[in-house]
Image (cartoon, rainbow, N blue to C red):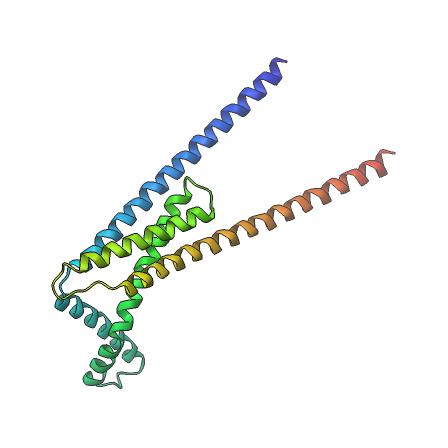
Length: 208
């Protein structure tokens, strides 16, 4: 009886230690993710704080740099005027792609943050996307008070779509890892089952 009590006590201690480690890990991930999310908010609203001329100039400079990189792969065949034309042409799409990417990262970070403490449910996913939508709406409202900037509901929708894309990618990765883990566990069970069968056959054959 004392041996059984000792075994139960050891099991409870091991379980408690595992729960403590798991809680510590989740807390560390939460702090790291929340810090990254805070920095992302600072960056997004910092860009929104720029006036129209500064923001447009930054977008054009980034797009021009991308065009110059592409031109380098073409052995520099484009002239400066041609690169300026391409930069102006693609400035708007690049700007929207940047918005989409920023909020895809936001959606991913929020999902990681929530998943440390909650199971994946439709309500968690809905709350995640709603969080992104509200953030995007506040960003666009903020731009209404910045010189030469304007708020756009279309941008709110695009940003929300980016957030949903980020969440969807993480869910697919999560499902893929879960299925892979299940397959590995199934193979391990098959191997142990096979070894157990060999042991039984061996015992029946040579033990008789």
